[in-house]
Each structure stands twice: as C-alpha cells, then as structure tokens.
Length: 240
Length: 240
DNA sequence: CGTCAGCTTGACTCATCTCAACTAGGGTGG
DNA sequence: CCACCCTAGTTGAGATGAGTCAAGCTGACG
Image (tube, rainbow over all chains, first blue to last red; front, side, top):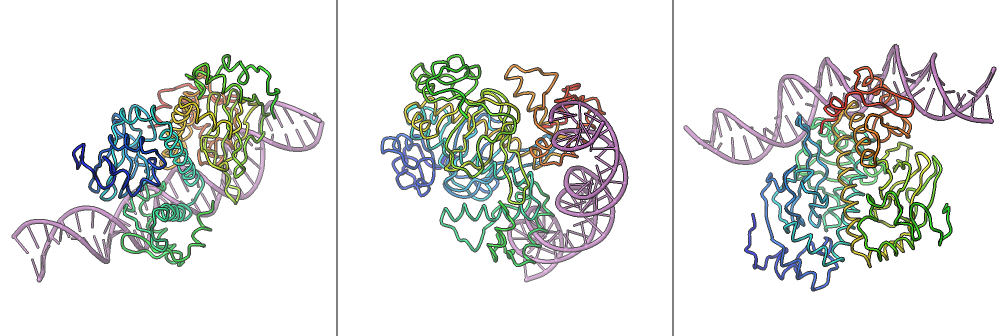
C-alpha cells in the first residue's frame, strides 16, 4: 500500500517533507517544533487508496492511524443484519484512528481516490509519550470530532428528512470552505446510498428530498454535486 | 455551589483526600503520580447539585470541567424550536467538559442529586501542560466517549424503537456494573421524557415499548427502574 | 382530599419506508 | 458503431412504524 520506500521524501508527508505537507497547518501535525516534526516525519508513510478500497476494517486490530491528505473517506459501522450507518466523512486534514482501542470500532473506506499519511500505531503512541504537544493536538482533534458527532446525533435524533439533508450539505460546505473550497457548489463524491446511510434515511428519501429542495430553489441538483442557490433558506432549514 | 472552602479536605476530591476518592481509579485522575495528584487536588473543589439543577449551560462560556463523583447527569442539546436531544448520561467516574471549546455545546443538568469534583478550566489546562499523564488519560476518556457517541449514532440512525430501548437498558447496565452495580435490576433515575429525548423517540413510544418488552418477559417494569428477566433475549434485540 | 407530575393506553395520522418501474449514462464486447 | 448490461439515480403507489392528540391512571405532596 505504501507508495514510497521508508527514506523517500514524499510530497505530502513522510521524510523531511512534512514541512511541505499541504494539510499540515490544519491537521494534528500543526504547531509542532522542528524536533517533533522530524520525529513524526521519520515514522510517516505516504499511502494511496483507490475509490472503494477498505482502509481499516471494523473489528480488525487497530494497527495504524492515518492523517488524511487528499480525497474523502467514509467511516461505516455495519450491523449483523446488514444495516449500515456512516458515522461520518473524513476530509483532508482529518485524523483517522482517534478512537484508540485494541480494535477498530468501524470500517473506513475510500470514497474517491484518496491519499493519507500513515503511522504504525505502536510507534505513534511512542511519540505521544515524548511529545506532549502532539498529544495536546490529538486531544483537540478528538474533542472537535466529538463535537461533530454530537451535532450529528441531534440530527439523527430530532430532525426530519429535509433538515438532515440541508444540515449535511451545509456541514460539508463549511468543512470544504475551510480547505479553500467553493461555496456555491458542493461536490458530492459519495453515492446517494452513502448519504442515506449517513443521515439515517433511505436512498429514495434522499433523492426525493433533493428534488424537493431543488423545486423550492434552495439548491440545484447537478452531476456529481449540487449548487447552492439560497444559502440563507438552507441554513434556516438546517436549524441549529 | 461549592460546598467546601478551598482548603477543606473533602470526602470525594479536593485537598489531600483525592487519595480517598471512590471514583479515582476509574476516572481521569487514575494512574497519576503523587506529585500530579497533589497538584490536581489543590485545584479540585467538591460541589453538589440537587436534582434538576443546571450544571453547565449550552452556549455559555466553558469555565469549568467536572469529574462526576456521584449521581447522574444528562447532557442536552436544545434546538431553537424546543426540540431536545439528550446526548448522553454521565455516571460517576465520567468527565464533563471533554469538548474543549470556548463555549459549551450543550447543557448539563443533574438528573438526581449529584456530586462532582470541579476544576476551573484555565487552571486545569495549565495542569495539562505540566502533566502529560493527565493529558493522556483525558485523550483516552475523549476517545471512549467518542466511541460511545458513535455507538449511539448507529442506534439513532438505524435501529427501531425496541432495539433502541433494549440497547439503552443494556448500555446503562454495563456501565453500572463497572461501578459495582446490580445486574438484575436497572435503576432509571431519569424520566421517560429523558429516555425518549435520548433515544430519538416520544415518551409514548418509550412507554409502549417498555410495556411490550415486559409482555414478552424480557423485562419487568418496576418503580424507578426495570428488572432484567431475559438478558440474552434483550441482548439479541439490541443487535450490535 | 385535591392537585399535579409522571406514566400508560387508545385511536387516528402522517412521514418515511418498501416495493416497483423507469431513466440516464458509462463501459464492454461483438 | 451499436447492442447490451450494469450501476446510480429518480419517481410513483401503497404499507407501516412511530408520532400526535386525547383520556385516564397512580402516587406524592401540600
């Protein structure tokens, strides 16, 4: 899976070029000293996954943690009878593996072509003991992922279909904007089934709701995404 | 709100008697050195809240973090139109305030009479810089709270009423057992409305579901709680 | 003894799900 | 190049699980 040998200087992470990593400033690697960055870089391995590839497996040993550098990842939990819940989507700068445990509590799969900076968990934990800065960054990351998850919990517990879809679109837009994305167009690399499994709806309800929002001129449904026509009305719908 | 002056030795936390704290071994204060424990103790203030009291307010400045030492706390998020979602219940040993941010993202209220060990946030953050051990414990706490929240997310996204209620009862039982509780009887200090707002249901559906489970001999509804009659069947229902 | 909050139960409604048909686009192989 | 298939998405019609509204029960408390 690793696309570079251990000592290779890669463009995203790894080796001496963590310094050039384009997501570093927004990831757990931000605000580290030169020492810390060097130690981190020594452990980092750049890796790429094609669309659909499984990155970590639910129930499997938690052997690695990853810092996403490109693409989109879905975290899924599967029930024994096949029902699926997508816990969330990870974007560049997000950290995969915050739920420290002996095994992964969910699977992670590449939604589209995806790149990440990979660390062996044992070695990474070693770094945590030496570098409280990194530990602190990780706590902040865990804290904000917790806040995001709680936000989503409210949605699943108390919002109707239109509110869920509106909140999902705006949440994705907000995160993409932080990465320098467009605010009029929201790319949706994931399928309707993914969106449905994230929002606790069916694929048909997601489709109908998008059609309805388009009919009300809040959005326009486009190929591979949607265009935001009335951000204010969409925000009022999302209601938070 | 503090029931003891700053230098008073209290039975739960605070002053020199952190050593005697009955939840220390399972809380973030576990596995600290004598030094660390002393510094923590110097900042701790024992506080008590009567049933229904608001401990922290959604949107208010995040001025304190608390370690629950007794009773039950509900974390609630309110939507502008009054809909309410209970994110979770905190039991003794749990830590309130993991979502580090400038303001609290939710309110916390005492379900029954409740005691906690309170730290001013600024001072507590100072400790984190000095004691990586504590930081590490906090990351583990955040990590397991994240896992719990993700578990609940699946429930709200994909489970029906009976599955939600069964999972809620068993989850509460498991946590209580870790605290030395009974496994045949589950006390429910919270109201049906609280349970409904936690499970994304209405009070009527919770009531009907409990009645139905009782009719199927999985549980018996008792005053202030339920008795577990068929743990295996209940577990099969919870389906995870 | 009356009141009130918490809870249960019943009858009916409705938002979402289920099942099914259909469309559109992309890839493949003859 | 076309015929075919396959996946993703949309739309419709009917079913259903949970919500809504309403009534009644129970125990605590003044």
